[in-house]
Image (tube, rainbow, N blue to C red; front, side):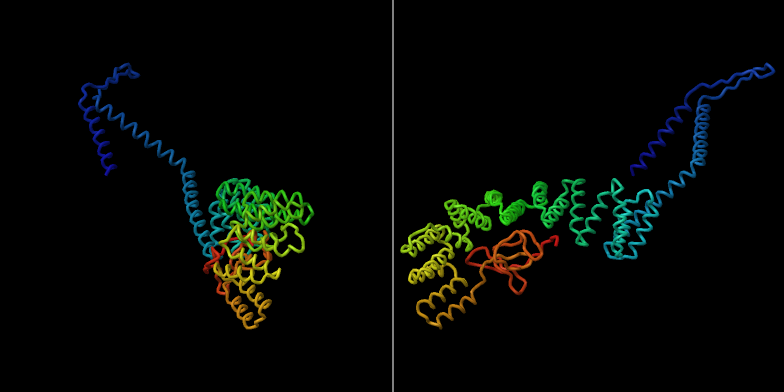
Length: 465
């Protein structure tokens, strides 16, 4: 509608000019003398002269366009063919990438050949398609050659690098993959997925000093959540501290443990290692302080042997009473957990205080039943009454009791005696948690309190393995 209106306006404008010219009075006079000396005079009406001049101009313009078109015809034909080939090449790329996604090897190879032929000057994407088609066809060496050629193209270099990275990961060549990932991170230092994969590879290769730096960048650019980053940072500190302890470098180990403790004073593996280090160096008060602080928020059974080791020396005749008081001090810090009562009951039994032991077991039973509780009951009956039926009854109750928390890998379900940064076999990093174990129906018990537990489906996390 707008175009039609614009055309009418142009016609009206030309008609108005024609009327204006026709209304003008006057003429144009041409005078000249021929070779014989005669004067020649021609008078032309002004309007007719202007229309004639316009006609001559239009004819000249048309003639110029015809001549120019004839001269430029070869170039125009070449440009047309180039545009047509470009359209066909783009379509071939689209079909080829679709074929790669669909796993159609034959179509992918054919479209890659067409794209490279139709787009000789823009072979970045065609090389990528050719490489992907070669990988799909199992020709890994040819695919890698194409990815290497992509590196020579400024705009497509990153695509080549990503292809080489994926190829290295697929063949489990993690050292090469890490080298490529670091080069990619140099090109795109703020790209979250590059930061994440570089970090995962550094963790897998146990290059923890580099991993700590990468973790900072990954957290900054939201490639890794803050709570996950903090947990991994602690795990790395503990792993490095364990290496220092194995090498006999206790001072360096203590500094790392104290740094990890500063991140999270309630993380039990840190508390255990640091308290043990303090006790070995005669810093008993420091050990007691961090155990008590941790026990207030997490009555973890692994703290109980450490608490026993931290007990001050007493005379032999007062050993039983002082040991009971020592564990009652721990219980007083958190009376809402059954673990404290079980610890005191066990200490009482070790010192032959059977009545006190029974009372504490009863208190623990009112809070939460457990396998440990019924085993202690069975031991108590064996030591006091000797009633075999009662002992067997308690052992059966222990077998039927709900599962207790343990150190379990959340990715494999494997149970461990103690926490470690890497879960072997497999070397999964920071995957061991204090939680309920997996059960046989492929569910994991993710209890969140001592009094209840519930089965949840196992979630697979994408990891380099």
